[in-house]
Image (cartoon, rainbow, N blue to C red; front, side, top):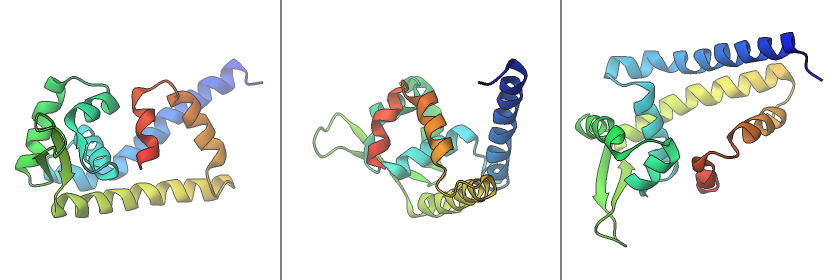
Length: 150
C-alpha cells in the first residue's frame, strides 16, 4: 500500500514527467507558432482521419467555440483541411495535409522514442503497468470510446 509521502512523490513525478514529455515537442512546434493544444488537435486528426469536428470536441472535451480559432489557425498554416462529410453534408470532417502529416511524424517519433526509452529503463518494454495506470485514470473520459479507432 502506498503511503502519503510516496503518493505525493508520485504526483510530483507525474507532473515532471508530463513537463518532460511536452517540453521535448516545444522545439518543434513553437517556431511554427503552435501550442500544445494545436498538437492535440493534429494528433487526433492524424489518428482518426475523417473525424468530424463534433467528434473532436467530444474527445478534447471542449466547446465548438474553443475549437474554432485553433482549427482555423491550423488550416491557415496548411496543416489541416476541412471537408464536407460524404454521409451528411451538414458535418465537417478533418484531415491532415501532407505538411501536417510530416509534422506529426516528427512529433510522434519524438514522443514514441521517449516512451520506448522510459519503458526500457523501467524494465517494462511493453509499458504494461503504465498502460494499466493510464486506463484507470482515463476510463471515464469521453474520448476513451475513440481509442479503438487508432
